Length: 148
Image (cartoon, rainbow, N blue to C red):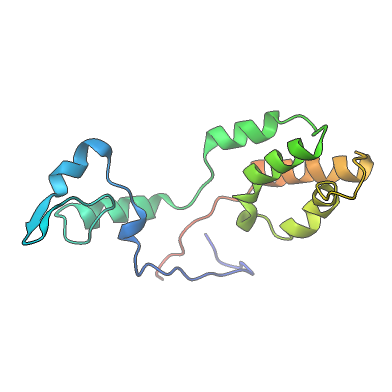
């Protein structure tokens, strides 16, 4: 699936388990006692019986964007103020790692958030805005490389 790709990555999973939150109703099941008191894990510890299977299942699903966020981005109207630009950039900025050249694309829009710059939304800004939306909503599916 990734054969012939020009971009490769490596993943640091040193604390991968600790990136997974335990569901609120399951936190009490992780309780343990020490001489200092009772403790409960908020994130998945390595030693739980099903932790490796759950972690592997999540890894096999790959990394992808939240469909609700994609819908929000598609439906976003052109900003009418620096505040609206900041709100849009705050949302799409979370996914900037999925877009090559994000900063260059966003530059015409980002400039309008500066205090001494007059807000003038033109063709250049609209093109950048639409391109960001398009790139985010049609981002390639990120997948884990095969071991072979």
